[in-house]
Length: 305
Image 1 (cartoon, rainbow, N blue to C red):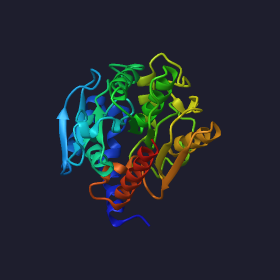
Image 2: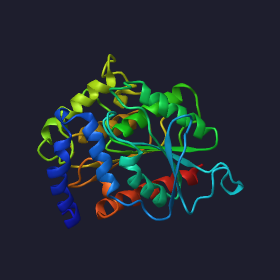
Image 3: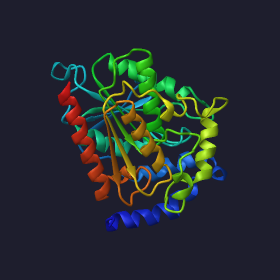
Image 4: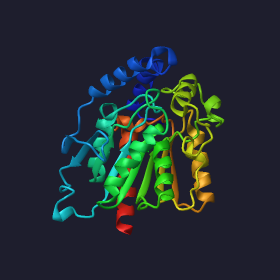
């Protein structure tokens, strides 16, 4: 059974946040509300925030107290994390995701860059991928990079990894994905089958966001829907997904295709959890458990190098 905290959070999300995710609500208001809601959550202690560009892209650099400066002798060549936030490519920012990502950085004891990539419809594809690639080029020149992301940011993490491999840049050390949105055609059965169980997203909003991001491009294009990417040389990957979300099938199909291609992948399903429940790690035990799993996974991958 889900914790009492999780059950209360589910009720609040359904009442206060899910109604925001409709095309009629308007992107400007959605962006403002998401930022405002997350600003109610205090940043965790022991993490320093710097607002500084990464490869020319606006970013928050979140550095745990346990990590030396990247340029210092003690930390030369140490792994860093590049985090790509979710929000359907149309909403989301370092402000909306900074508290969660700071907790991830602290839990993993890793210097983390949370970039503010360009959003659709003002900047449709491939703008977000171009920004992610620019940041990755800068970070990978200094040492190993773990790529992480949630929802659309998880899909962007996959598209970025495919682009990195195509361009023969240094391979990412690992991938960490929360409920990745990797099929923008929304062909998974869970889109309809789990519609009543989802407490955050709504189907019409997802379809709207896909159209805004893809623009004139085919939704089955691997750069748009990386479920169709070539996974044969992908790094070790951790996928976390909640059992109750409408994007559940994206994670399941992704794991199946990655394994079929020979990639090392772990699919971790959290019972009775919703889309990107990790956002509540400040107070919800299931989300804290997920961050513990991420920390163990990233430590394991760093030891293998």
